[in-house]
Image (tube, rainbow, N blue to C red):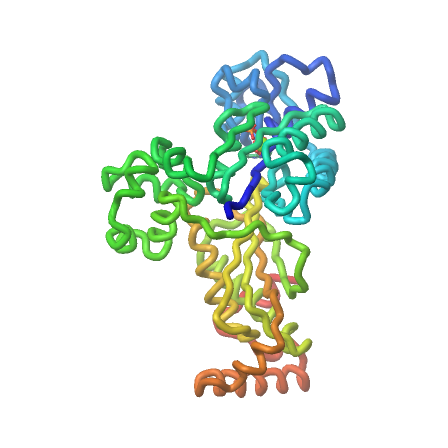
Length: 393
Ligand code: TTP
Ligand code: MG
C-alpha cells in the first residue's frame, strides 16, 4: 500500500497577506524586508510578491539590490505577529483533513492523508479541497504536492507555483525525480551541491546512478541518505509534533549563530537538561529529535529511533549531533535549536536495563551524578563540553 503524503506551501506568504489586507497592493510588486533607504539601506528581502519576482527580486537578496532591480516596488517592513496568526488559521484548516499533520515552517506543512482521504472523495479531491478552503476562507493561495514520500511531495509543491498542484503517481516516482536538477533534492545545500557538481553530477538521476560507496567516502552517512532520496527511498513519516509524550528543551541564541562549536556546546547543555528531567521522571525514550530554526524563521525537525530506550546524556547528545549534520551547509545563521526525547517504552526499559557492562557503568555514573545534583543543586556539576551556564539564563 502506498502512502499519500501532501506538502502544502503558501505562495509569497508575507507579501500575499499584505496584498490581501490592502487591496491597493494587489497586482503590484510588493517587497517585504528592511527599509531600502533609496537603495542605500542594509538588510535583506524576506519575500516578495510574484509581480516583484518578474523583476528578478528574490528572498534573502540584499534590499539595496532589490531596490535597484525594482525601484517602483512597494516596500513593507515585515511585522511577524499577523503572519503567525494567519499561519495558525491555515494550520487549523489543514488539521481538519488529517491528524497526521507536521508543520515545517510558518507557511508550510506535511500531511499524511492515507487513512483519511477517502472521507473527502480520494487523495486528489482532498488536496483540491484544502486549496479551496484556504482560498474561500482566507483569500490566499497555496501550492500543493501529492506524492508517496515526503521528499517528493516537498519537491512537487514547488514545481508549479503559485496556486500549483503537482501529483506524483507512486509508480512514476523515480521517473519524476530523475530529470530534476540536484538543487531540488531536499537536504542538498550549497556546499553539498558544489561537491556533487565536482563529481560530474547534474541531475537527481545522475546521483541515483552514482556509487553509494563513493558518495559515503565524500559525504559520510549523509551521502548515503542523499543517494537513497535520489532513488525515491524516503521512509520518514509525517510526525505530528504533539502526538507523543516527550521531554524537550530549546535555546534561542541571543545573536543568530553560525559557530559549530557553540552549536555543539548548546546541544550538550540541552541534552544534559533533557537527560536530567528524564531521570527525575524515571523515563527512557526511544526517539531523539532535534529542532532547528534559521534566522529567516524556516524551521525543521528531524528524528531517529534508537535500538533501545535511553536517558543517557551522551546518547542524546551524539544522536542530536548526527541529526543536525544535514543542516550545517545551509549557509544560514541559526536562531534556535532544540532537543527532544520521546516514545517512552517501559517494557523495553526493563529488558534493556543492565543488559551490557557498558550500560551498567553508564547507569552507575548517571546515578552518582544525580545524587550529587540532588544534594548540592543542579549546577554543581556539568560536562566540560557543556555551554557556560552563565550564558544561558
Ligand atoms: P517561503 O515559503 O520560502 O517563501 P514564500 O511563501 O514567500 O514564497 P513561495 O511562493 O516561493 O513559497 O517562506 C515563507 C515566508 O517566510 C515568506 O513569505 C517570508 C519568510 N521568509 C523570510 O522571512 N526570509 C527568507 O529568506 C525566506 C525564504 C522566507
Ligand atoms: Mg511559501
